[in-house]
Image 1 (cartoon, rainbow, N blue to C red):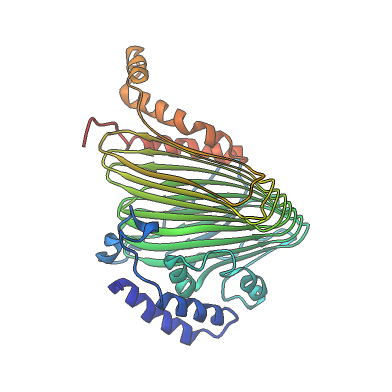
Image 2: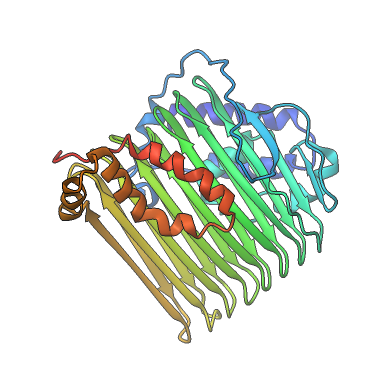
Amino acid sequence: MSDWLAQVIDRADAVANAQKDELASLRQNALAELKQQQWPTRRTEAWRYTSLHPLEDMTLPALSQDVPAVPEIDGVDSLDFVFVNGKLQGDMPKLPKGVSVGGLTDSAMQAAATEVFGTVKPRTHLFGLVNDVLATDGLVIDVAAGAKISQPLRILNFVSAGSETHHRVLVRIGDEASVSVIEHGAGSGASVNTAFAEYALGAKARLEHYRFALHGGDAIHIGGAHFSLGTEARLNSTLVGYGSQLSRLDYDVIHAGQHANAKLNAVYLLAPREHFDLHTNIEHAVPNGTTEENARGIIGDRARAVFNGRIHIHRDAQKTLAELNNRNLLLSRGGTISTKPELEIYADDVQCAHGATVAEIDDKALYYMLSRGIKREQALVMLNFGFIQELVAQMPNKALAKWLEPQLRDRFMLMDVRNGS
């Protein structure tokens, strides 16, 4: 066990003794499981390509008091919930009819919280258990059956240098309800942050989901988004992630009801020497489910990306349609991508496909643009953005996609092409 994990367990014991709400017993169970967990090493398959040495060796500086400005997004009239270093800032916005929002300790939200807490996220994820026992601040969102919430709910989680925070989001979406949720995390200073979200979708529920994991620099960010889909539920999720000293995200989708549909698009962009690890797991437990997953990464010089995508078709999940595709663009031969798409199929009446590619910048395309008078920096931005533009264009919220485009172009300026290691 690492020194950091030992300290986590000591703090979790203190939290467990102090809390007496309805989540207390769930936290106690998670703490008991956490104490049985082994610290991941390179021999641990799920962490084979991601070292946790940066976390073990992390020495946090004095806490910065800088509070970032909330980014305005033209054309997106969102209901904003702003967290800085784990603490909610300001008052709750006025909510439309059909949606209730409260903190994890809000007694009025405990019924919704206990129904979702720990029921969607796998129990085997060590850092998920860490988040279970230490995340005392966060949000519980309950969307009533039949409610159609037109305003997106935007959750901003800013992490300052010197902080260690553990953030949790629990969302229950009733039958035939619809809502859009934007999770926006950012911070580049030396910090440690775990951020996990669980979504339980009822029958015929609709969720438009975005996760912008825009941490960079010396930040250590570990988190996940986990979804359970009821009968005929629809999920459309877009992930945009940056690399940092250590970034790891886990996505899980459980097809718990028939005729559910899940679409997942992911884009990850790594500047030189950064690390990003994305693990996705799709569980088709019942018949007639559909999954479409596309992940594209651009990896800078001496950066390392890890992608592990698994689709598990259970024995009874006949008539499943599932497709997984991972494409990667290396900007330098010094960059590394470890990609592993997996299909595990136990049903015989299914249509499934998977694939992965790794390529470099096309020298001919770059030369052609340079010969037409386009500056090299601009040409690289154009080629990079062209690689991911298809997934950005598929975002249902076009105003959000338009806001994202210049953020990505600025990111590309940090990801110059180099010739070797």
